[in-house]
Image (cartoon, rainbow, N blue to C red; front, side, top):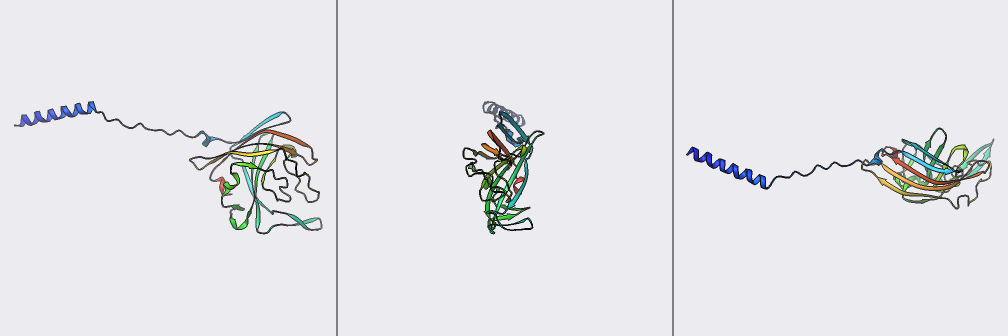
Length: 235
């Protein structure tokens, strides 16, 4: 009786093995997700001026954020001191990205006026949604940045005192005419959010830049990439 039981068990194991051979269990392939190379990208900028192409990069170029008085005007001058007023319930907010090398220095500034009630207090007042500054599309060059602070948009300064905007001094008349950037363009062409929460911005631009003597140069074939981590966005 015992031998018959063993024989039955052997036959069952034989058929089970044959079944497994005919219908093998296929394990699903292990999917290894590739890392996005943009996670390791740095801030960079390139442009041509006077026939020379410059390329600069930096690990993180955010150099500050600031508040200014929008629609500034001189109320009075006392002992050479200028007393400035403007719209009291609003703030002109700007974020400055500085990319430097041994030979060149470039600041790119994003500028927009917000109602104070819609802002949060950080190191300075900042918009609730920082990314509102960086939506895809064209931007105007703010010619009066640092002085009247009426215009939203962008501003750029480079080495040797050349910049897209005029003097910030109220002691002299406005330096640039309203059409100083009429053939210029700054366009954010891409804004991508990575899985880490980092944003990568790309922009193309050209502009006229001026120094304090109103000497002008043409900045061409501009390209900007900013890699903005979630920690950068608290300023």
